[in-house]
Image: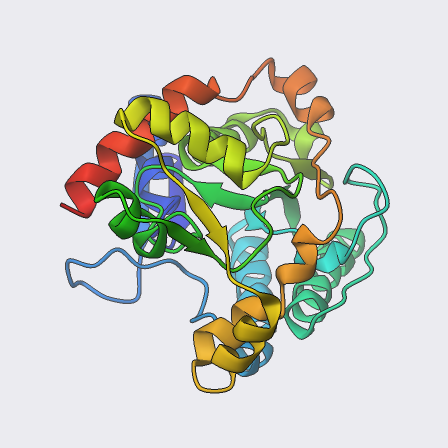
Length: 285
């Protein structure tokens, strides 16, 4: 049957990754939890208790399956394990999680590293910060952002709109994972920071969106005390609040090793903004 690329999860990145691999002439199989019309990712719901039960199990099962099949394993990971970094985040930045979800992601990463060292699996991790872009229904730039933005209302943010932060454009994340999956063996046994847009603020990102939309998008920060209070009655806000420390300090990715190895640059911001706005106008009419 030949080489098959198996993608676990049909969510924000999975389907775009599948499209990239098919365009490269590869056979692709997408594995998802449901046959329904709603795109789903492999990650469980955004809940620390659920993550603690499921995320390590998922990693162990992926390692066992890839090892048994003799397949390489490319893992998409986030940056939760770094806590409040003191400087740009590189593959060598030590883990210092400041949240339960960060501890869980660090543990899962350690499981993968230990399996690689034992020779149980050939793997690489591609890490990304907060997503934006077409299909980004599980991001900070989804319905809570676009529904008010598209009708000229002020957009409430739970985090500091002026904090310096790296954001990853979803098609670039898919392109980065495809590159890792198709590359030579030298990419394995390493962690890679996937290509990110130049570190900026949410306010500056909104400025690019405004230009593409043709109308001003105004942002307003929700006071932290209100976020805390809302979290008492709204579980998802409580889970998001746990991670807001990532906007308390500059949270910047150093993706230069990836760019140099693959000669790949992130999508220009103006283009990314135009494509994101076009998607949002269709998704949230």
